[in-house]
Image (cartoon, rainbow, N blue to C red):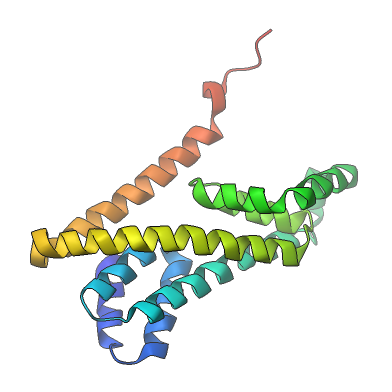
Length: 199
């Protein structure tokens, strides 16, 4: 199980901050919200220091965001992607996104399921990279700090009330996060229940 493996790796890396940071960064590439929760739980348990956990989370999530932008930028090289969006629409999209890059990135960070399509689209449209990177850093600092703080509080509660069963409680919570995110993404993918426009 992912949670058990992640926890075991962090436990094995105890007192080696660089290895702990590398494991947390790797965890953000797999499932960043779960990695945030698990890293916070390890801080509560005293296995990882708060600066290492939070710094690694920031680094991993920002790297992932920049990677999504890069994937979108690379997709421009493929003819099939070019055919999907004609050059004139690309220009219009680039102008629109470039003028609103900060709110677009911030909103997509806080709404489940929007980050992948939004960040790759920013790359595809060649939105200004520095503006995108600064917006991604700002959004990550806000979202990750909030989620990490909530996870610390949750970790203290689970440690106090669930003791050794806290990992089972955390597994259920992570599963709920994934299900809610996927449900929200599907719900947005089918607006109006696929009904056509009404007159």
